[in-house]
Length: 423
Image 1 (tube, rainbow, N blue to C red):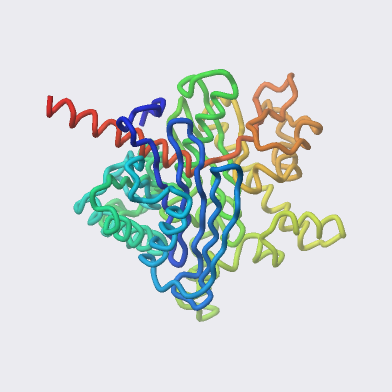
Image 2: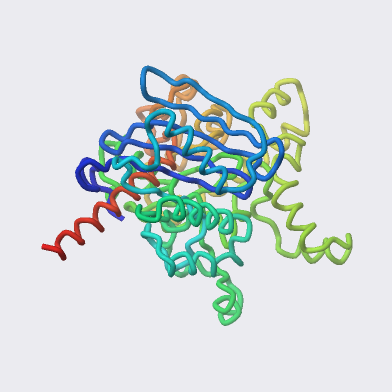
């Protein structure tokens, strides 16, 4: 969708958006002022349903942040949201404020139907439920958060922003797996991609960094966190991405294997006697960097490498080798690359990963300036030398802001349309 400026687009006086990211046992939240895109408060409720539940809340108004924490049992997501609402109210930012324009929800899987954010109604909620089989770990938690928030503020627009939406522009030849078409269609088996809000935000910000519009540039985005994904973005539209039916496919990640021969699954069933659930846990939770060397923190891996740890060094090399393969492949897909951009926790903070990923790719026009690469900053920046044909950049991601911007824009459009009808 086109992202307009935010000032006044949701109606006079209502300019705040609450962003909710509901996990199976946690709720992350941020309240943003969309008149200037600043954060008013951030918080996290974790270990929901346990005796050791914890809420951490940080107000960002009134002369500086003063972090507050409470511990003790929080029974469910309803109790978690009520606790978060109490903390916000204590700062004069309550959910009953007329300044609150909408609540934006991160929803992991939107299938093929949801190509843009959507105002949530009962039918939308039913469709998100129908997608649970292709997102069993994520959509149920997202649904719980939506239902709880709707119950608390039934009068307020609630918007779903989908991780998969940005990738729905992939051409069919990139999205299809080479399996029987009828089976694939019957069970919704195709490549959907994830981290879409991050890829959308970062590709757009990269164009700004280059002084161009998104439509003018081709960008390879490397979202490298504990979960990791790559995308090829041509003129502002995703044409290829590394994650597939699930977030398991693609790059080596903190605990996920990424690309693997599908026959490994059958082999483990037949030879090791492992069940489908055991293999699922192996590939999603006990693989990747943690499976290779026992650590999924890149800082710790680099420390071990510096001490001569061979397992850590091999894990790093495997991680970087996969990155190089995707950079090369996506360069071929795009034909012309204007920038390769690193983002998320590892991408933003690990200079050795960035340097190693680009090393040896000079024939593709890529190079990293050691001094620029070593600078730590929260700002978008170029780390390539002036002579490099392709820009290499670091652009901090901001998925919550992206969700808030899309939510606010959509609510403003809806209100504008309603006003035209009434006029």
